[in-house]
Length: 301
Image (cartoon, rainbow, N blue to C red; front, side, top):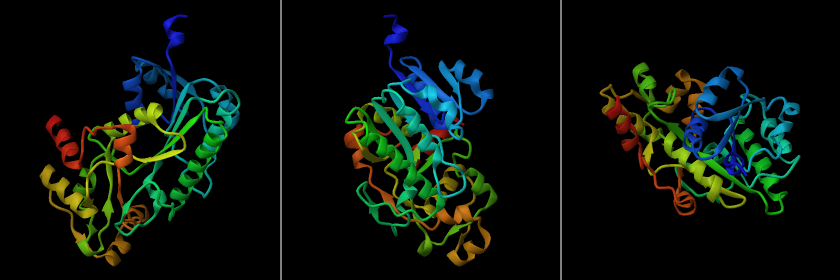
């Protein structure tokens, strides 16, 4: 058979910043397909060696052609921005089940499904306890991914990656600079929360490894080795960027002045264990902590 038919096909659903990083690594060696709801992105995707498929997870009837199309599927599309339900992953799963299932399905979820853990170290075995609507939607999406994995009679390896805050200098809003320049306050230390981080390039590499090394019905934290409270992270970034450190305020004052979305992140404290990522995916981080990741961006600036 011609080489183009022998190469495995990988479908990326939700080809945003991280999806594009994955595509760039795969395109020279694999047939990469990307589902996009924006027809204006077709030419840009083709320029990367990616075959674009115009479709919308909110319109299930147009997803039929995804069935049996690829051996491996990476699902990075976000849930709807409002409401309690997550119909998009349900629509994707139902489309994939119409024909032979892929060998692997990897879903990019969020560490927010744990809710507030009061700064405790968290492993993948901890029960979920979603606090916000967006976290509840993610739990529903995870359930659909597990459902199709269980129904695959062992032929489909369904993996879930729980992802914390993603950063990178070449990612829109991917550094604290904007908040630092606006002098957005952070919590005083006694009210502060622990946060978790992953560089976008390390996340893309983890997605790739999970497509081939992810264990069936397995959840994996994709987080670096950083162990910092949120305020300390912003102090560190400010010092590295030569900007003033952000003001510290008590929680009651923050609740009066900060947006609800930002406050929700300041209300959940946890530290993610990444041992499973290192042992099972065998990922060696390019940027072990935010120090290396931020410094790499400053060196290229």
